[in-house]
Image (cartoon, rainbow, N blue to C red; front, side, top):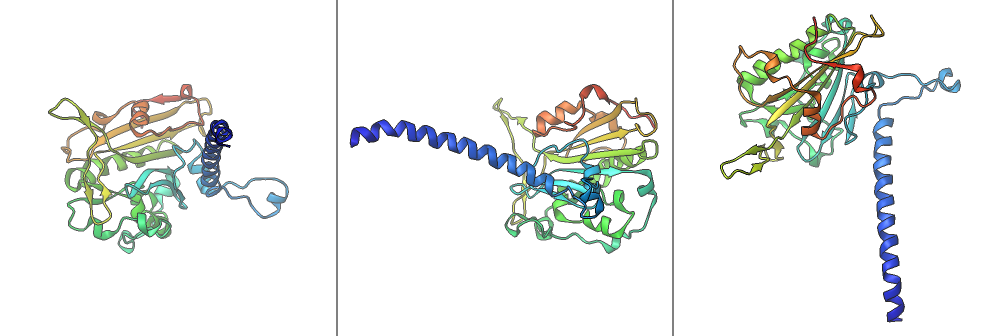
Length: 297
């Protein structure tokens, strides 16, 4: 019997490992399906009966693909992936148009920073975490980008859409200037897509080795990013279907930046942000269809 068990053990181990790999792949596949079904709406009217899929706002926002599929949350005006360890988003995607930006139907004073009820309480950030921390509750999807309705602006005040940002010289300075730049591009591009998120980058120390170090704040240990990225895509194909998509990518340190610093000082290749973040952007389109650099206004 002992000999039989010794002969069967490798087979059992192999099958168990195979089953584990299969299960892992299935869970990964299911997570992608779950993420997608959160933002895809099959109309229940006559269109559905005819087999026609009705597009939702989130379909339009994510038309170029998901950078990742972790804890996807879809709002009416933006989509994000939430990181339960860092207590902030991995990325946020917005779709800006000139028509929406011209509408000013929201009052910022009527919106308040609130916990995101869609995040399990164990993994949330709270206002108490930010209190007296020395950091601002920095918007990833900018409030001003969604002033066309009070509801849309209110959605940007969920703490899941915030990251700890240096206030003076960053959130209230360079970062604000970059947000304004994205809005200005919507005046000349029919469609502008904005991808934003935090980064935690390594740096060399006195011993010659590299370390990833970042501060955490509050009882819930909300991670303070070392850097932020913002990718702005201008789509002029409504005006000229043969034109290329124009992309600007910015990687900015989370620190006070002098007011006279030009935006292009922090412009980097899109691939640099992908490598640093582990995210893949614009995977539904060929890189040959993208022109990187300054967007003409």
